[in-house]
Length: 186
Image (cartoon, rainbow, N blue to C red; front, side):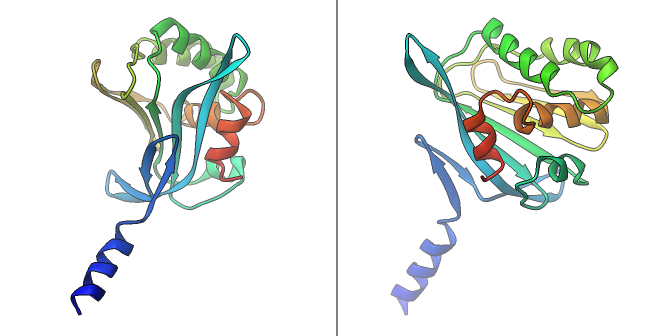
């Protein structure tokens, strides 16, 4: 009987995804809503011909989907987790975010420069082991940074929330095709 109980405890704790040494839970709760891990991917850059791992990303949604448009239209919360496996300075982050944000705008795009200006004020440099989270809610975006430059900031705007999620999963100009594919579970 004890072995059965231990086996059941082990099985119930195995619900997680792992990539490049980073483990993300299969489910989490955001403002009382349960979200599931839609997918996990890695962001790499190439320097001097070598691929370098920057962060492991996870996308949490109310329901799993491989369709970017369906995900963007889903009601309720969504969350992007970026677990950094490399330190990145603020200017480098802003350049990468700026390219993806502007190239993947899907909501109120005539205001994308103003939206990005609001966002970039709150992006700090990150160290290896830091985590940056984007929590998209129907009426606001929450940025959480865990680590040396910890912060939590709320910014109003449904369009901003939608555009932040789009910058990671839209096919036009994602941070990397490999990351997008992982987040969509492809």
